[in-house]
Amino acid sequence: QVQLVESGGGLVQPGGSLRLSCTGFDFSLGAYVLGWYRQAPGKERELVATMTGFSRSKDYGDSVKGRFTISKDNVKKLMYLQMGDLKPEDTAVYYCNVKHTFNGENYWGQGTQVTVSS
Image 1 (cartoon, rainbow, N blue to C red):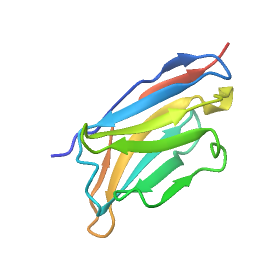
Image 2 (image 1 turned 60 degrees about the vertical axis):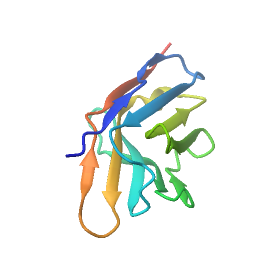
Image 3 (image 1 turned 90 degrees about the vertical axis):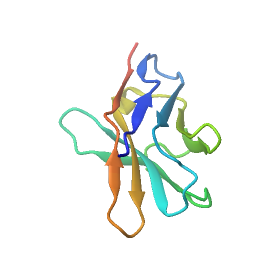
């Protein structure tokens, strides 16, 4: 049973940085796509960043390109989302996700709140 757990959320001022972490999975497995998504109140869940298990391909939502970085530590079994130059519109619950590339497995964490406000 996969249980993803996010941490690192909180309140940060505009222009600040945060690093989110996700644990509960072997992120070295190449058959999975690893990702971060977010959902703001009243809005649909949207893609923030994804990467393949082999780290050869990374993709970012247009609104976070150049400011956020997805990465992982296979030894520590952690996935990260480094967020910089945060804006109020980045306020949302952030979820980590792992999805098998062909067998339908799809796991979500419970989410961590990020609030950007002065």
